[in-house]
Amino acid sequence: MTRKQEKFIKDMLNPLKFKWFVLTKLPSIWFWGVKITDLTSKRCELSIPFRWSTKNPFRSIYFAALSGAGELASGILCMYHLSGVGSFSMLVTGFEAQFHKKADQTTRFFCEDGESLKAMLKTLQKPGQTGTLTMHVKGVTEEGVHVATFHLTWSFKKRENPS
View 1 (spheres, rainbow, N blue to C red):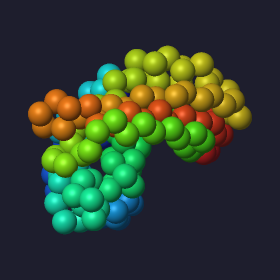
View 2 (view 1 turned 30 degrees about the horizontal axis):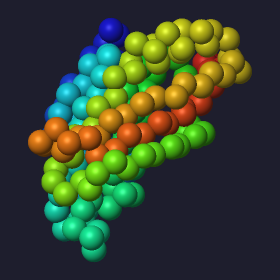
View 3 (view 1 turned 180 degrees about the horizontal axis):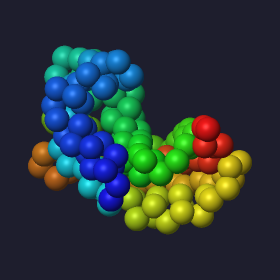
View 4 (view 1 turned 180 degrees about the vertical axis):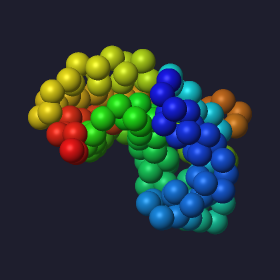
């Protein structure tokens, strides 16, 4: 783990720094009240509350809020692995979701594809090289009910290092 990766984890797990990050970069995440509860090189866990800002008229969490939290669970893991390892661009190029049950309480999201991501990024050695990885995110309620599964395909491109 590089120093930048250590700092990234520390900053993302700091409630004030995380709130500032999402307020300035992803305001809908701030509005929905998403919180990171665990972050390591292997996994990211976060939660989204069931409250007025996430609720739809059917008394469950709005699918867009669930999808945003699902994307963030994988995206934060991507940002961690790109911290301090050179310059890369990243972009979601595919998104698939299955909604299994009604999310009518705080929901936790897990992405545990850190090792696969690290291995794929190691193959991108030269500027201009690209790679993709489909990351899997599972959403469960506080009671352990599986409510959603997301498959996000991330595309990465190694950039020229600035001189």
